[in-house]
Each structure stands twice: as C-alpha cells, then as structure tokens.
Image 1: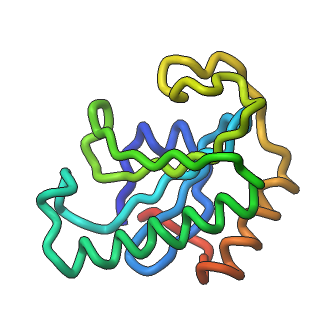
Image 2 (image 1 turned 45 degrees about the vertical axis):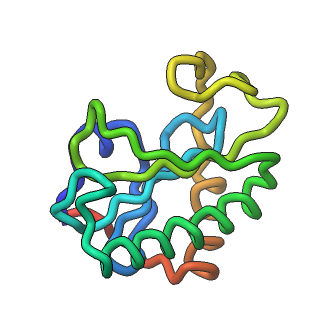
Length: 139
C-alpha cells in the first residue's frame, strides 16, 4: 500500500495488520500511533459496512494495546484529515503528566523527544503479540 509522504516524514512505520499500516509518530513525548487503513474512502462516513467493521475492530484492538503498552491515563482517538487526505486514525496515549495535558496534542505539543531503537522494538513486539503485526507497510 502507498502511504502519504507527510505521514512517512512524521512517523516510523511499525508494520502491517490486516489491510492496514501501523505508524508511530516520531515524537516520543506522547505515545502516538496512527492506523492507515487500505481504503479508497477519505472520510469515515464513506466506508462501506465491511470496511467500517474491519477498521472499527482494528481501532479497538490498537487502542487496547496502546493503553496497556504506554500505561496511559486516557486514550485519544481521532480522524482529522485536514492536512493529509488519506484516511488515517490517530490513537494517542495520554498521561496526566504529558507536556500538553489536558489539552489536545494538536497545536499544544511543544516538546520533542526521539524514540530509542529499543523502545520501537519493544512496541513492535507488543503489537506483533497482541495484533499480529508483521514487518512492512509501504510500497
């Protein structure tokens, strides 16, 4: 599948689950994953019933894995698409002590921390175990 260049610039490609790529925002200040489903639909309402069911299940499963892995206090799930037209769903682990709590990350995340390779590997292992994540994600 092809992933928008903006997403690729801003994220690490963790791998693939059934008909979707899983990305990790490069800023480790918050645990911010992005699900990029294989679909021609741009907006949520345009999904057919089968796609809606599949993607909803993936969001639920990814959300549970993110909550557990990052030991989050709260989870934010959103689709915006104002800058990147390709459908993608943000799944963000929030903590009471994160740099922009309780505000949304958009427009308020002013700190940056890079992930260590071991952190990315540990997250990949968690997602492989819980979601069946496999290597790859882009063509």
